Amino acid sequence: MAAGKILIITGDAGESFEILYASHRLREVGFVPVIAAPAVKRMNLVIHDFELGWDTYVERKGYLVEADISFDNVNTADYEALLLPGGRAPEYLRNNESVIKIVQEFARNNKYIFAICHGVQILVTAGLVNNKKIACYEHVKFEVESCGGVYVSPDEAVQDGMIVTGKTWQSHPEFYRLVFQCLQE
Image (cartoon, rainbow, N blue to C red; front, top):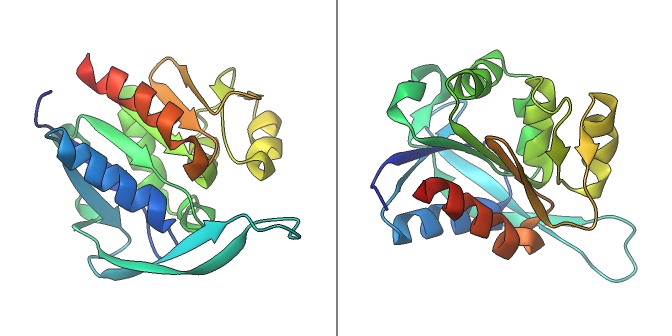
């Protein structure tokens, strides 16, 4: 595989496992992951897990990770693809005008966009789910369908054109199988 750069958009309360797994897997095969956030700083990530007796996921403090670049300094021409991990970060990042412009620019330039779990909320706000098959965390399903997307179930991950989506970190095997197929093209 080529050693291009992959942009990862996140912020405080991003999902630890989704961010670190992506970063490590990309490095393992020769890509350069670049973590973009609202500011260059150390971010507090979270761990979302599913526990017996809970109706929804639980959240715990996760790892710390340093942002490499701020959203305002992203030049999309420098990157081969974009990754939108989940956690709670997408809930507020989808309201960041710079994030939406970045995501839309990747789409306009026909570059791959990978989104997992709540990362799909950013795709929704960017207007990129209409008439697309989308896999995401089940509680994002309403947003996807309200904006014209087609929620897929029971698939853990799905590709529709230049967009690859996955349900949760539990979908990593299926999601990253598709991600790396796309990056090998």
